[in-house]
Image 1 (cartoon, rainbow, N blue to C red):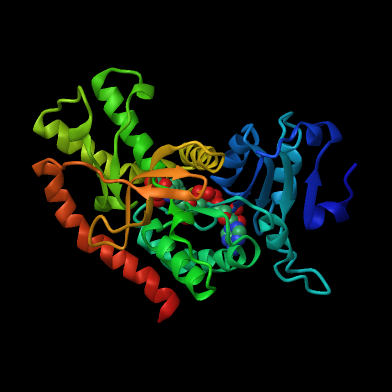
Image 2: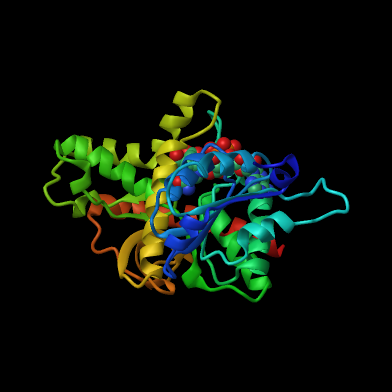
Length: 345
Ligand code: NAD
Ligand code: LMR
């Protein structure tokens, strides 16, 4: 039986039998923005993960309900729902954020506003930059060792914002900070598989650059068995770059992709957890990188016990891809600088 008081700030549900099943390999994952369009299905998928012993759902609204709901799924992860407790008296400041973050091994951040038709991801900067800044200050205080996975747009700028905040706090570790670009990979896999008439599970496209428009560069030339005409290659490349707009338009003002993003965020987090648990796994991520003239760049990375163990190369580009690459670099550099300036100016 839960009282209103116990649900007000931090709601935690567990059972002795679940606790007994937890092994030392179980990790704590915190989702910040857990009551949102992405946050809720992402939290549900994470609740199903055997690798997770504790799932902390943090948001400025709604998380006691999300956590109570998820807690009825019979899997091992204990779920807590945390709120900032900002309205409490005496003031409790960021107590709820601290509760969510303390002991977290991975922090996934889908907090922030989504696009409406006609907007670019950069149009979200003014609102989301501040949200990410506040949440990363919390990470720096409560779980500086955690791997951070940023979903909040514009990812090309929110990752540099996070890096600058962590540097200010003296806890920046480039191996632990990632922008999630898995959505671009799963879109590319979906579109290529449909074109080839094969099972999408058999396709793995490398997508490099960033996560906005032309900064998204799928390397279809490296996909074995994929031989589109020039017009088809152009169409599928542009569709991958602007796949987000397709969903924003279809949702007609009620937001952007949530369900497919939740799946992408879940896939990303699972691989990070596999790495933390000692496996070597490779996936694309937007990380600090010296592969190009951009300080942050998405490419295949090897994940392991320390987060990003190696930033891997992305192979040879076709002439078609090289032309997109050349266009992308100045754009991405600008978006990175915008994030850095937000913190340092
Ligand atoms: P949403 O509005 O449905 O949910 C956002 C949630 O963030 C809300 O529950 C809100 O209360 C919460 N929030 C706001 N400020 C907060 C704060 N300070 N602390 C904690 N929580 C806070 O939006 P959504 O559709 O879930 O999208 C969230 C973000 O993810 C957007 O910026 C969107 O552009 C981005 N996104 C990124 C990708 C990607 O591939 N990286 C894909 C889809 C969406
Ligand atoms: C996406 O790629 O779907 C997300 O980044 C959301 C958006 O604004 O397009």
